[in-house]
Image (cartoon, rainbow, N blue to C red; front, side, top):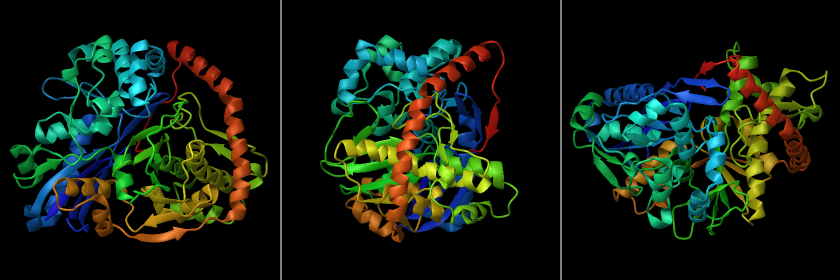
Length: 514
């Protein structure tokens, strides 16, 4: 039997066919266009559907007669990507992605309200511009015509689920982005009323592993899948990937690095960060939670350097690794702040931007490349440092996602954190985790640990160079100091840009495959 995983990320959309015993039978992917201008980061939902349908039809076509064995499918996407649709389920504009930070003022306004503070005491989640309610407040103020025509406010997962089944459904972890109160199994109804958002406009919340419905007959025929195929609910990509990483025990952490990096550690305590820097979400197993969060760019940093310096190379990734592998840590004292799109966990600062610090006349392309690679490690060390304040120890990290294919990145992260980094034999942890959740949901496996043992194995362990680790820890203190010193300048820059934009002097609009 076969399960299909439709995985919509920030850079690509994929379809992967897994046998129930964990073998990849067929896969296909397409790049997704992103539209970027300062705080604006958008994609087109119609393109998501078109490309997702394309990759699915390609997979079922290549499966040939085996396609009749497709028993179920599941959808996993990036979280906090707002989609507004009309009564027929058609999108009313571009999706505001998780890294879109135009709702910064709305987030601040929401955070200061008494009604939100009551909700926050139950969820432990602050208001920030990457989340859904501030985005909806921004939409109501700046795009009132679209807001007034809206029938449903969705995330990327519920948008695709509706296209497949006709049902507006999501899981509780995706619903958390709307400040869903898990302890009460409810959206914050009173807060929604104050914001002018109908409860019926939000997707219905169902448990992970539950069966949403059979795929619509017309869709099944179009995609080349059996009309009996059922859609099983998983969860958003970062949390699916933790399951796909086999990260279940206290002391273990997962580093899932695609375009962005999600870094989460397992804890046996449901804690609340008093400074609201990290997320804590339910995890698999009794008394298990995940603490951590996602930054705004992980693998996207490496893609940026590739486009700047190595785009004409026949093998750009090998060229990058070869040029920097023999350099010393932070060569010549060079440090890079990786905030090209602002930063989420743990800074929650939409105004900060990338900076090379310590640049001198002797630095060249290779040194700058090395600094950017190292910044991917400093970013997750920053999260780990916050976790340490709450006695959450990290003994090992399992790496997955596209960035984990670069061995030097894994080694640098091991050196920077000072713990072993384990690389799986399949970097598609998100799709694997979603498949595992679905197969446990239908009862094929007893639990996620049993399923993981069938799907994945550890391919390599990168042991930390403790001499380099000591050096990196000292540079990390400067990394933190540079941001603290620049914070007033970041605010001034954002205010100036806002003034210039109001005068019609706009920043460059970039269209790219992130």
